[in-house]
Image 1 (cartoon, rainbow, N blue to C red):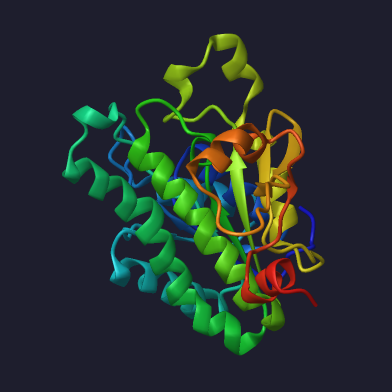
Image 2: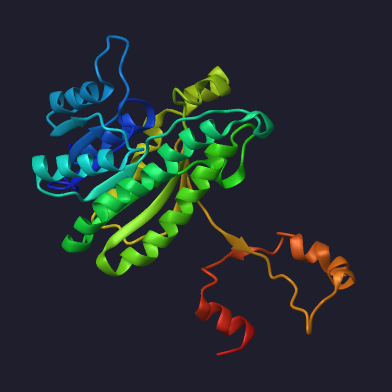
Length: 294
C-alpha cells in the first residue's frame, strides 16, 4: 500500500465489477477510504459492492458498501452522506456507473434513451451536485468523470450511450472552469478496457491486452493532491495513456457577409482538419479578440 491518498475519501460508482472495481482497489492501495457503490448482485445474490468492499478490507484498506442508484438524486446524496458519516469528508469522486442499450438509432426507443442517459449523464450530475457544496467548503476536490471513446468518436448502435458520454465531457469542462479557483480539479477519462459491457465486441487476443487494471493508474493520478491538471480528457488502455482535445481548424474569415457560392468555393478549407490545433473555449473574451481586436 502506498500513502499518497492517506486520509482522503473517494466515492466510486459502478465499482462492483470491471473498471470501477479496478479503480476502487487502486485508490485503496494508495491509502484512500472508499465508498464502493453498485446496484448489482453476483451469482450468489450478494451485492457486488459488498464483495469489493470485503476485498478492500481484506487487503488492509477501509471501505463501506453502498447499493443506491446514481440515477436517483436521493441515491447520490446517500453516497455522499455515507462518505462523510463513515470517513469525515468527500474528497474524490469517480463517476463510473453505466449501462448500455445498444440498438441502431431507428430501432431505439425513448425508454432506452432515458434509461441510458439517466445513469450516465443525469447520474453524473446528481453525484457531482451532491458533493459540490462540501468540496467548495473544504476548498479541495478531485472529480474524475468517466466518458468513453464512443462519446468522442461515435460507434454504431450507441446513440444514447455516445450522447450521454459526450455530455459528461461538457459537464466536466464547465465544472473544471468553476472549480479551479477552489482547488476542485475536474477531468474526464475515456477508458479502453475489457469489461462485461465490451468483452463480446473484442477478439480474445485484444481482450487479453485490455485489462481494467491497466487504466487504474490514470485514476490514481487524477485523484492525487499533487495534481494541477483540470479540464483534460485522458484516454487510457492497455498501458497507453494519451489525451483528447477539442480542436479548431484555421477556418476562413470572409470580409462582409458570404453567400452560398462563397462558402462553396472555400468549403474544403472550412471542413478540413489538416491544420487543426487544440482550442480553448470560445468565450466572450476570446471572441472579442477574434472579431474586434485587443
